[in-house]
Length: 194
Image (cartoon, rainbow, N blue to C red; front, side):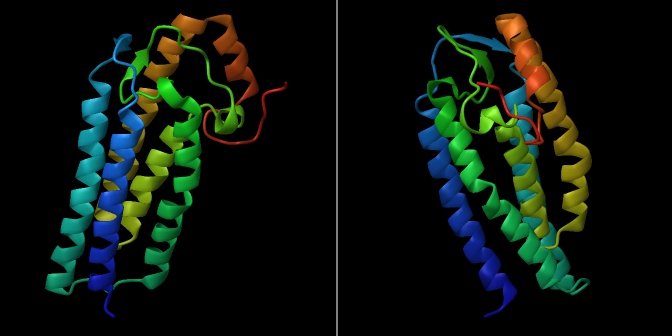
């Protein structure tokens, strides 16, 4: 079986998976609440879909021109990191429950979530999104797209984290500051003390 057939199979399966996850994750999203920095979700979605489509385009463009051979090790690394973050993403979304939102939203009765993956890192969903786009670029060996993700998507996601933390500090004040001191943003090196 050639790589193109495998890649198309991956695209079909991962597209259905992402659509199912989006529907199930955000169908329970709180309807009311204060949205801060509403521009962030459309920009994040634009970058994510851009990486997705550019990776596909770059693969087929270089494949048709035969300017690049597929390195199976790079593809395997991309696949492993893409699939490897799925359990963490699912766990983080599940723990957030009704607080999960595509926007930076503070809903009525919002509580600071420090359970599950959030007891090890403050931003597991952002971490997963960043790793996922790197995987999407590496699977088809789309190196220009990888650089776009590295220098476009990732800096924007770090800006989104900054803005989200600003909204959380405004809502939770000292409680969030204490949590921020106890748990790293992206590295599971500290754990919240019970």
